[in-house]
Image (cartoon, rainbow, N blue to C red):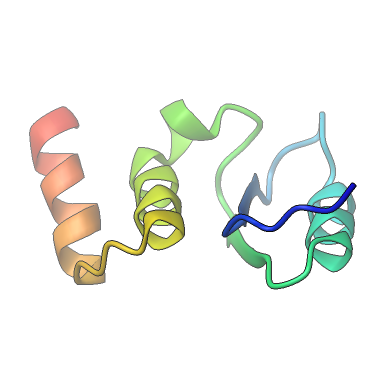
Length: 79
């Protein structure tokens, strides 16, 4: 089986539960996959770095918003 959908793999650099190497293995195995790492985030990316997850989803969906909008709007609205 192969994955043909746009794929963005996101990981936290401080995640001790799922090491960075696992995310890199996924990206290597999925043709065209994009890798985003949030260095200070741990295993709970949605809590640690919601803007990073939002950016990843936007990229996968082909929504092109400026990085400043994505990070700043999310932070202002949701803290």
